[in-house]
Structure formats: C-alpha cells, structure tokens
Image (cartoon, rainbow, N blue to C red; front, side, top):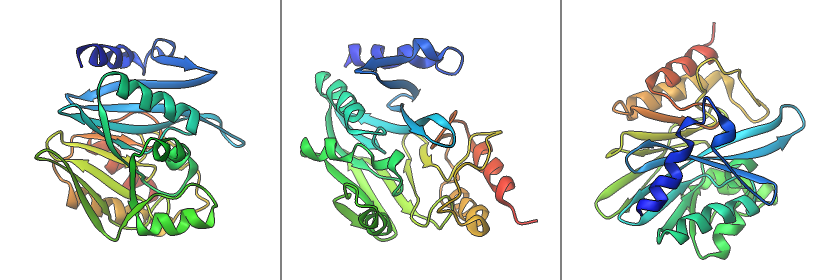
Length: 242
C-alpha cells in the first residue's frame, strides 16, 4: 500500500505541470492525484470533434485495501491500466459507479465487467445506455443507493436533471469528498456539451445537491480542477434563469 500511495502522490502537481503527472501506456494517458487521505482523482483523455482532446475526471476511494471507482476511464484500454494498477497493490475493486450515460463515464465499463467487478448506476442511466448500444451498467437504483467498505458509507443519489436527465452525485461522508461529474463545473469553466442537458433545471438540481450534502468540502467535477462549495455556487450562477 505504501508504494501505491507514493505512486499516486507523484501527480499532485497536475495543475501546474501536467507532464509530470501522466503515465503513458500504449499511447493512452492516465493520471492520478490525491485530494484526501483515501480519495484520489483519476484522469483519462477523450478525443472529441468539438473540443479536441478532453481530460475526463473520475474518482477512486480506497479503504482497508478495497476500492470503489467512480466513472470509468474513457476507454477499455485505459480502464485496464487503472484496474491493473490497483490490483498490483493488492487493492480489491468492489465496484464501479457510473455518473451518467455518456461515454466519458462508462466508456471502459467492459474492462471492469471482464474482471468480474460489479457496476452500479441509476435506472435512468441504464435505460439511456441501452439506447446508445454501449456496455450497460449491471445494478440499477431509483433515487438513492448506499454502498459500504466496512463501516464507511458511500451515498449515491439522483437529485434532478442537469447535464443529463440521469446524472447522480456520489458522496463519501467520512472523507467529505464528492464526485459531482459533469453536472458540476470547475470555476471559470464554460457550459460545455448541452445536447442532453436540462438548462432550466440545472441550477435547481445543484441547489438540491448543496442541501443534501452541506458538509462536502472536496468536490470533483467531470472535467477540470476539483475545489470546494465554490464549484456548486459557480454552477448555480452559470445556469441561473435570468
């Protein structure tokens, strides 16, 4: 475990020097850095027509040599790198939680399933993923699902439409860490892809997030730098109906 923590701590300088934080495997890039004692961000890269190569955030929570992953890396090959990295350090992946149905959330899901790792998502996400003809999350929930590693809880909850109709929040109370996914924007970010968005409800949904998880201190957006409650406030302001 000590070597694994050292490996993940190296990219702590991601924001100021990306070249030092990247691990290149078969021309695929995967980055890690630590935001809390047991919580890490993983970053993979998705080639898009509109924005070029985009960094996509996910999260990993580790406790007692067990882990939950929040969103897969962008493709199966990079997901295999993440899985192998954890396994080599004797970390058992208990499951992967999918934030919403877009490819930057579940593009590597097949790699997890091949290893027998369970996947969880909102029932809304499963239905939308079926229409997209992609690998489907296995276990669905309606409004709220609490997962555990030992006595540590992970709350996964649907709180309304925003970036998509199905986007959820994953929150780890013991770490005060939240994976917000693409419904949460980094400070000074633009609106991004809106093809499946509900802009009218977006601000209200983020207000629901603030109310449901007022103790959140470490918030990971789907793209860009993590931060605190200011990310939620910025997102509310951006989509506020004038």
